[in-house]
Length: 284
Image 1 (spheres, helix red, strand yellow):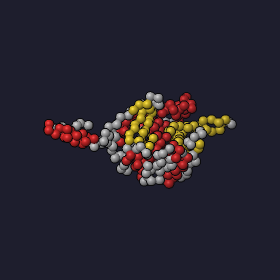
Image 2 (cartoon, rainbow, N blue to C red; image 1 turned 180 degrees about the vertical axis):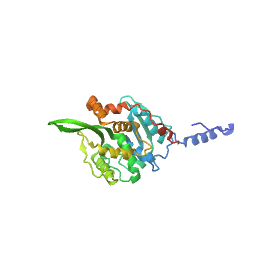
Image 3 (cartoon, helix red, strand yellow; image 1 turned 120 degrees about the vertical axis):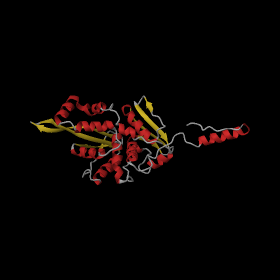
Image 4 (tube, rainbow, N blue to C red; image 1 turned 90 degrees about the vertical axis):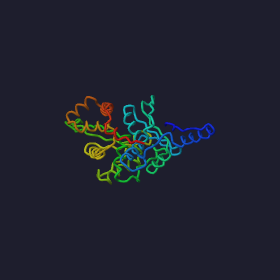
């Protein structure tokens, strides 16, 4: 910040200078937008992303969001929505970019919606989010802890299990209680007419729910409709699968095998961020 020019009289130089420095100190080093305070699509999208991939310390007011290296441009966009003056840090060991800031006002706002202390074990699906903002919240969460890919469908032909087609698959990770709340929200909002039971993944408190084919398409079409903010890489994978005919998908899947979803994600990692996203960055 530029120090304002002030004429300092020799007889009272020390006093006047102290007044100037006090005025400077009264301004915070970083200024935060109201994007995480005022209800909007961006606010609840970012809250969903933080619920999935964020670290929040309620006591200190520290918030941290890390995304892998290939999503660095997108994290820069998220940072600009919250505090353009901050800079991202690169974590070489994790091959990820980190956005970190300290604001007790913002953390207090976040805690209105979900548990932040040991959230990987304790988080439940928020009940305080207005219905019109559940969609961007779920979109943000899927961009953090969801996987969009393809799943083979099988038929028994001549007594042998054979891949007959390939369909869109959406898999979401989380705690059991969070996922139960998420699938229930989809039913209440009439996106789907049934609940899905979370399945255990490994030995930790990690579960997953999966949607394949028509169910996955309904959810993904819903979250992306009229979206103003999303992770371009994941939507690009979805569009590729959705717009490919079955023969093309079958050939791709059979050629790449079990690493299909990983390779498709990497294929679209270097796609440029949609310019309209960058143009919507807020000014502090």
